[in-house]
Length: 272
Image (spheres, rainbow, N blue to C red):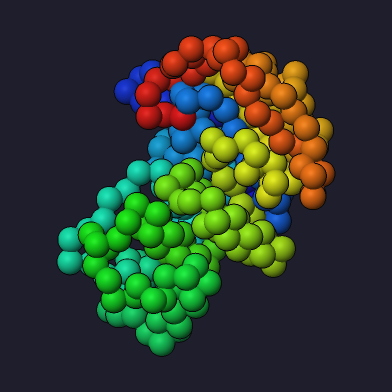
């Protein structure tokens, strides 16, 4: 479904990803983890077609990503970005309907199927009650949820998320990932960049740890989420234990053993 071979990418001639090789198969729910600046956002930018690789190949469902037209790519991959701002004059419904771009007719008019898809996405994400609200009047968490609704409305086989739950409270984070698990069980391939290690371990079957633009570890969650591995990635002391209900690995930092503010990165601010 997604294949990267020798992928190198960055910004302004500065390399952030330094030779990424990975394969994500259809139906996986994968967590992308790593310190600030490790390359998570950069990798998602490449996979979504926003950023052109410096070297290497990226294939989506067997297609070289650079050879896909924007509308083709949008019909295959949806993304929820880390940073996006509300648009003055745009309602939640109008924002969610943007997800139907790959399917619009030449006249550019939304049809009944498009509106039904938007309504379904808003119902699933709990945004239907805010359908007529201006996006500028939403809280940070509400706006992020509206972006998820837009991505679901896009009806793709692949969903990329960059810290999609960052502005949500604990209950809404769990609700979002419960929904993602439901979609994943129905066949949606999910790749989610997450800073919350424990959230990723609870909901993702596979974890990929990045550090300094390279894959440091990749495998089933219960195999790669170990104290030794997490300490190597984040350069701080962790206590790792089993979740009392699910048995999934969880971790907490040990106070007084941090690596220092800004430590453990490598690719610069805003490119995590």
